[in-house]
Image 1 (cartoon, rainbow, N blue to C red):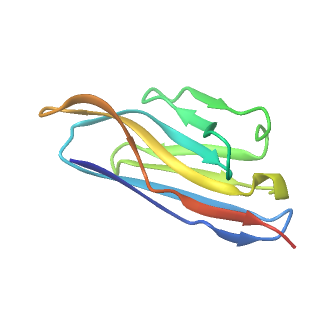
Image 2 (image 1 turned 120 degrees about the vertical axis):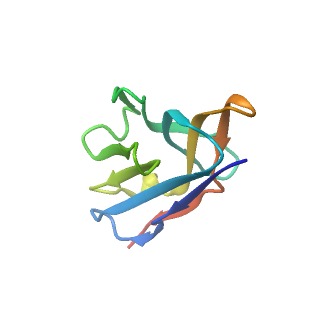
Length: 120
């Protein structure tokens, strides 16, 4: 079983910064793609940022230049540094990873999410 656990959400003023972290644990041997989605009430999840195991990144246009994704393959963590936060960044942020396990093959896994609120 693979688990993803997020941390680092909270309340921040506009213009502030937060750093989200996601740690993968369980019985697996490879984390392929990993990244972050966000979701607001009544809306679908939308991609914020992703990074392949080779280091290729993709960002939503709305966060380019403000957010930076990084990962530590040795520790099986993926992080999201969020700067210059805006009220419209308020959402639940969910970590995801495509993980390969000897027992279950390759599959998509999700964390439970962490709330980010940008408000004065």
